[in-house]
Length: 81
Image 1: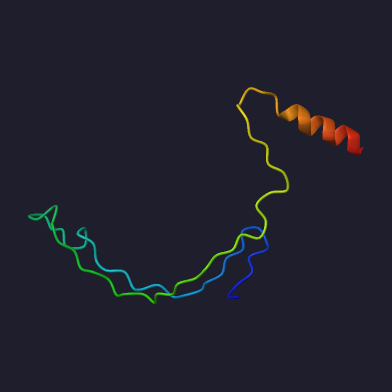
Image 2: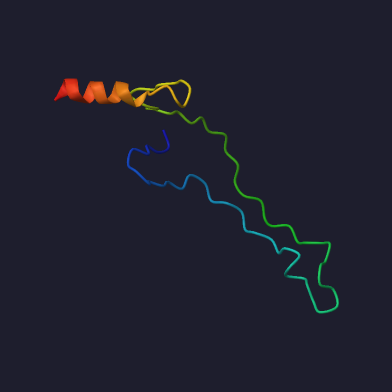
């Protein structure tokens, strides 16, 4: 296991990316306003990983948008209190 992202907005750096190249805007001049070439960047490190989703949702309801699915949530909340 490389990382466990269990908190909201948590980030984890697994591999360092490559260095970016120079785009065509770097080579633009007053006479060559839209150059058709660019400089490639350096390659980054590649690694094949398997991502596992631990928890998708407690409950999922599907149906048409206008079938009043909210009534099920209201009834469940009233019954629990």
